[in-house]
Length: 322
Image 1 (cartoon, rainbow, N blue to C red):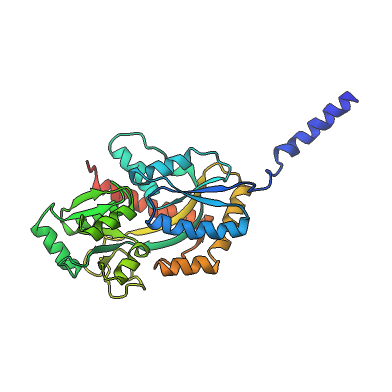
Image 2: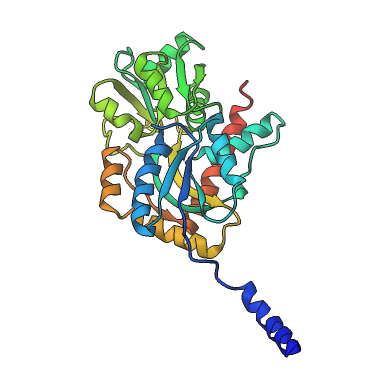
């Protein structure tokens, strides 16, 4: 009897090795936003989390872990257990930060291959915003002023080599101008500084600017996209304004740690797929001026690889910024 029990257990071992994991999820999920509240990642994460809760019937808790242009929150998720319970709503800076660290011969806090794409939820070209009180009313006037006052016009960002910093430095390099970089902990604090007059320019996503433009507190001069943004049809692109290499998109996408099991990833992918069809989410995204731009994992992975390669080249061109 003892021998038969051992043999039976041995025969079942391969099946056990391929058994499905326990039902997922059975407890709350943490969705990390690697920036303070008020930026593009935060504006995307909160409606997505609320919609996912209704689908998976478990809390999805948004946790802001800002700092170092997103590196702190991204690294936290990269080191987290690959069980599907810790995710990140990341921006395109996910790929930029490791490359920037290499410029200084420092070990990166994480690498892009430590993440598994779940879904892209929106993607918008960055917009150049200035206070409504600023004297510039066009891209040409802004560039001319920067040439007349090299290194004097202060602009904000979400941190050195963060999404907003890279966009502005791309413009500066193409236009042959020098600006004064003032880094903040995220887009939210940077917008507050723009509204208060602490800085005079900011590259940001349309969704974070829309309400302030409607209130007449911010003016938008240009767009980093190939085409004009429907919410701002009067705002020209930098490409059509004579800067063909100035193109930058600020997208928000959800990732899990790379070794997350396939069945768990399937649950998460399906939850996001349903979430972006939720009327409340669609209304929230549209109200923010950042409509849904959904891609499931395979397409998002290809998009991420192509966008990352372009951004890495941009960082290498910008070089070291101390």
